[in-house]
Image (cartoon, rainbow, N blue to C red):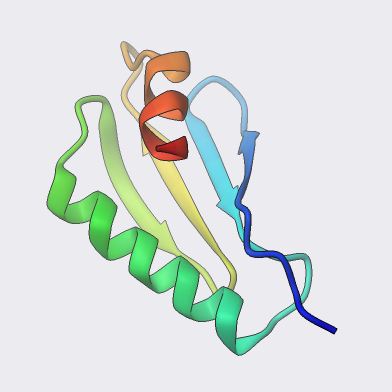
Length: 77
């Protein structure tokens, strides 16, 4: 069965955003998370203080003044 790697964006309080590619560990989801973390680090998005890749997700720690909706839109692109 083929797994969809469309990321799910989950707000974590007022200063966090989790971008999850899967609920289960898989090589494609892991590769997607690593690639996204690298892409976001290179983009240096305003309002992102930390990028923490996990096995199938990427956690963004946001600055207090970050525009959550703008960042979500940029990440979905």
